[in-house]
Length: 465
Image (tube, rainbow, N blue to C red; front, side, top):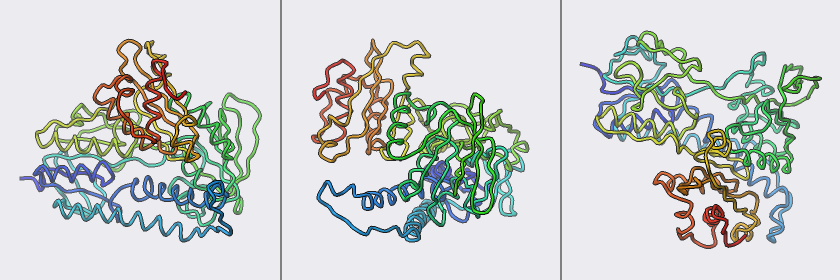
């Protein structure tokens, strides 16, 4: 008889949710985690601390820059206390990771402390002991993709990854972000607001790879207006550290003359890779694909019966909420139920200011597929609540099938984009048309009315534009 019905390997958003759901469904469940705290990268050194710093830095910029004076709020002498800001971030992380530990106890999930490695398809070792289970869920997440030839040293605070960028002891005069993706832009935003000059170096011809072309172009325009120096179609060929400075050598991606950039801090943010090393997958009869991912079926079961995988270690976007939904679904399949995840409708959000959010198909994807579609756009400059708040940057873009009118994609730039996109996800989950959006009553005055108007614009009939 096995020690457990289910052992989950990894206590990040996918893993801890899978463990709790498994226990709720009556499975004797344990979760293996090698960190001192639960929550994985997301809660400890990712989503949560970065959002805490984004919020704090936004408040500081508002108070420091004079942006509030147009509302009749005059502040003088606003100063940055970085130590206190960092302490508040750490407090938020502690509250949330501690909350998961409470949920484990509440749901009778055993926390096995240590690094897991398979002994066979039915057992693992962790913390010097052996544990057997009828089922396993691999939820070990991902880690920073290294840039060849560039050494990360978070302790020195000069060439850092995303973890180091959350712990810089002082505001750098000049930060260079290598990579124009979500993490680089978010952390670059934090330090720009706090006073750093920020240069973003992106190998591709636009920032935010994978997002809708209009969103990418207009986001870059907005960020440049905020003070970002964005160098696209540019590659980094070397980073040399001397004393407390770093010198980057860059050149055009297509080839050409090299130039150098001097910086006080360099953030390497070129993506993430699955954490599958050290699991001894071969002993369980498993292997990875060319990207280091574990292939799974619709039920998240691997090629080995009883072993499942979710989150960043399987194909698809590396997003905490995707991992959470997959964790719930995998636990439900193991318990004999039917788990459901619609991978066509996984929203993505960039928590800059303004935020950028997207769900469904981009215009580029539809063009490449030869689809017949219509587009409706509505700017926040024509939205009454946004105008009253002086929060008019951005727009909503709705893409619908030209024949059926079914909404295929929604893309938003707005201070509230991350919240607004939820409406689109729910509606699209139920097969909504642009007409459904347009004839659904939205409260006035709200930013959400822009979604309704963009849907009306699909048919060329917005009211306020």
